[in-house]
Length: 413
Image (cartoon, rainbow, N blue to C red):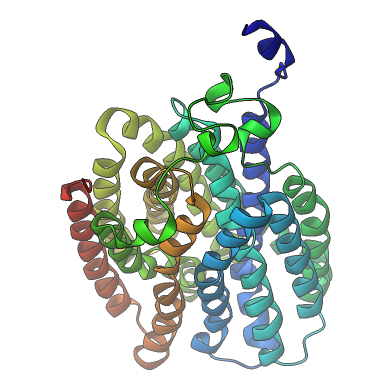
């Protein structure tokens, strides 16, 4: 009785296609976002702006993609990830093209800040949500590979953008980046698929799940309203909110700090690439650790080490320790980002996974905005990043405690 069904199933497990498409798509959008470090000095000089004002571009983008990620997840749950993510990629490409013609910093806020932020909101959570239902045994590995695209994009695109800016100026560099998103990004989005049953497959390449009938079997779990009232979700949300300024401040400011130390432009921007390398290692290494230690325990450990890594930034007299900071910070950052979606799937199931991830990421929105902007304002007033480092260490301690509380909460009866 099972033979016809088995023969009808595709020989290639489509879940891995989704994973690698997610790798490319996430690399494209976050490589674009973190290329802000390459544009930072150009914006400051072009528009005669202070660091806090320029950092607002990055902060606004992050605020929007975390807040609106809830809507992006809901759209994906309703219309599917392919339509949602393709729309997001098109918006990012159009926003970058518009930003390349900006004649004021306000225009950059609207295009790069708002436009890119909205586009990422339609790509990020739908992409991470699409990966989860395809796997049970290999969920940690699949999530690690897909989210490793963020690290790869962070390594590659800022360095490419720096080369384009050096060769043709920041406006032309941004137009080339828009073309990359419109081609590579859209192509990856067209491969997105959330429901294995639509391809007559089940998790990990097995047969379609039975018991709930067709599509529903693959996406069993809590509805969104039930999940967000769960105490485990509330503590996880608090941990994400407290960790956000710690995770995003270096992307906007570590290159600027390196320039203050008279480090060459290529090496300064390359620190963001080193964060990406650390992030790549972290996503795979923490996935291996989580399979042995448990995902929630691993999250607690990564939250603690995230703040501890700031000691290298504080102690850095030059490029050497800044590079060590970038790699160690990236490892912790990558581990945290790769752990959150499978933790949501473990705790709440796949029924509303994109929406749940979107709500969780909204907790990072305020910290993503205030962290880089406040860091810029503190530096503009004090001429030092030391108070910023101290504040981030405190936030990391709070995030660690909240993650531990998530681990300690019992599942609802």
